[in-house]
Length: 171
Image (cartoon, rainbow, N blue to C red; front, top):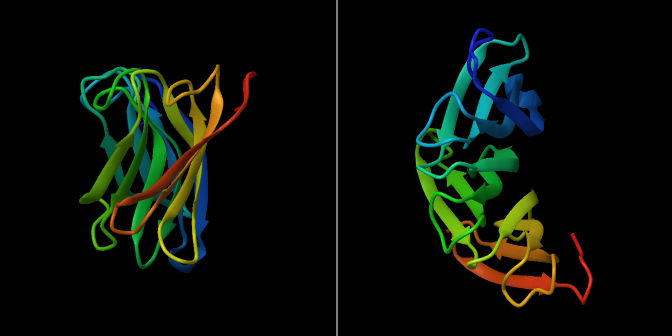
């Protein structure tokens, strides 16, 4: 996220090539910038390695992270992961959409969770509009860890969320 001379921690979890723009976009967390310990981030670089744009998202919590994301020419940048800076407690699943005109402007942010843990690890844009996010939950009626899936519309409305699991751990 920062330069090569910093003493902070960064971890990248996902990336995407944007061939039409000759860019790459990466998602993860950084401890160099932001409001707390770990903050979720995206960074856009040219195919030459030159910095184009970057933004962190986080607050006073110690573990905000973007585990997945993508760039959509028409709809902006989407990130999915976790936060403990806001929400119901523990880790809560987090989805952020930025403006298609400026990646620095947040269009909306959705936090989905319980007093236990919810976290998204993957997301995909769906043809009908919006995103599907997949992760896990230890709350919302789960016994152990259960698969957690949510559909979020382009306007940020959570269309539905489902927990899938039995007596064991599903993740």
